[in-house]
Image (cartoon, rainbow, N blue to C red; front, side, top):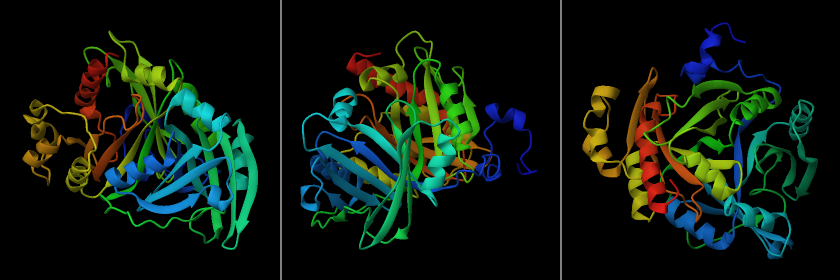
Length: 387
């Protein structure tokens, strides 16, 4: 561990700069970034149209009957460093059908870009990970890709992707997806973090999994005093790899007067899974404005949130009136401030949603906004009759 990492015993209760994290997480599993996120969906073609239209993703690659894939079809969308894969089964029964029937549309694969997919699988499985599939090579005229995979919470899996010897559009078996319809991007840059919801008393189990099996470090911890309202509460810990490129907050329910958003998620997803994907932008006002114009619905934040916001967060570059107009939340830590806003669920079940985030130095996760955010979610729960 680096000498300049101080007061390690206080990590659970301290939000500190990720710049100090590099060597606290063990280096046996170097991760270069998020390679792709694959969702199993009921209709990949229509889902692709939604993400292109509403979120500004561009057509990248395709696999299906035309490419020799007989059991499924996959559309690959890209915006800057974010890559979404939307997959639908082409035949009855089978594991993809079972996943959709049980969970609805949702994240199946969080793929991680690695230098050596074989070594990544060996290092994680020998530390206790359950293998999803062993390392194997795929090749075409553009080179070779090696992939391997392990199970994590619920039915979510991590696929390790080694593509250093590949120059194709996505993976072997895919072809470039030519499309006349490619709306302008909305300014989304990369995946900032991905949040997993797990069941009662399971948070520590999965945090220990990421620490032991993948060498992650816990950087932040929130208990039910930090994340609570009059009615509901939850607990959360944030796990990060050594270079800070991969961050996984893990949430579990806490006792409250009414059903929390985590309980609602687990009820309708039928188990643990990815709750939301946080995507970064350099200009949240422009991004949110463009998404709203394209039909994306965001959580409502009441005007009184902004009445004393500058007393709490200090001076910021943006116009408060403009942030109020778009319902954008603000929070500050020792490194700077951040701006964030959350969509309503983007699928039919009250499960998966997106967070739009702009960091102006801040490395934290918006602790000061938790009450306003959760009250906004509770209003939606009340509308659904699930609070």
